[in-house]
Length: 78
Image (cartoon, rainbow, N blue to C red; front, side):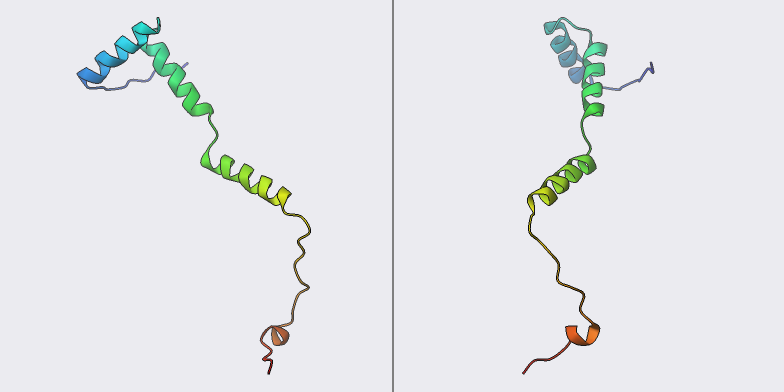
């Protein structure tokens, strides 16, 4: 287990200590739980990857047209 030093202004420290005491916990335990929760959440990349996968699963019946030759692609029609 690693130790981390955090600097807080006096007011924030005092309020955090009171919140920890109200919860019957130490300030260290409160911060540790917060950081564990923060570190265990999914990243933006993971969330977007899941959204993309779900969207691709919902798209059905889509088929890209066959490849067009360059001349066909730029063909002018009257």
